[in-house]
Length: 81
Image (tube, rainbow, N blue to C red; front, side, top):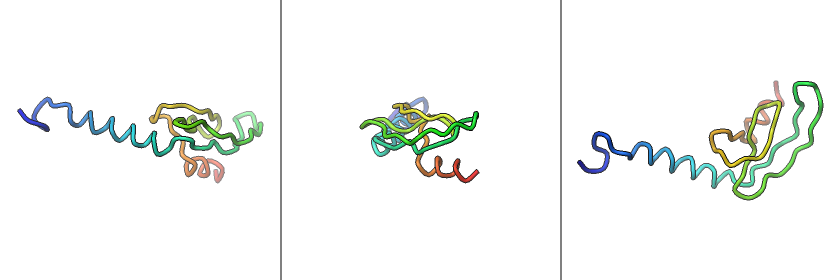
C-alpha cells in the first residue's frame, strides 16, 4: 500500500506536523496579566523562544506542549469574563 492506504501513519504524521508548526509560530508567546481563583493579581510575563503561554484563565506558565497552549486571544477572552 502507498501513502494514505489502510493502516498508514499519514494522518498521525499530519497531526504532529501541525502541532510542531503551531509551536514554532507561537514560540515566545507572552502570558498576559491575570487574576487567580483567590483574586490575586499576577503580572504578565514573556516566555522564552520556542516556549509559549500555557495553562488556564486562572493559572499561567510557560511550556513547550502545544496541546496546553493558551493564545493571547484566549487570554484576552478570559479577561472579558
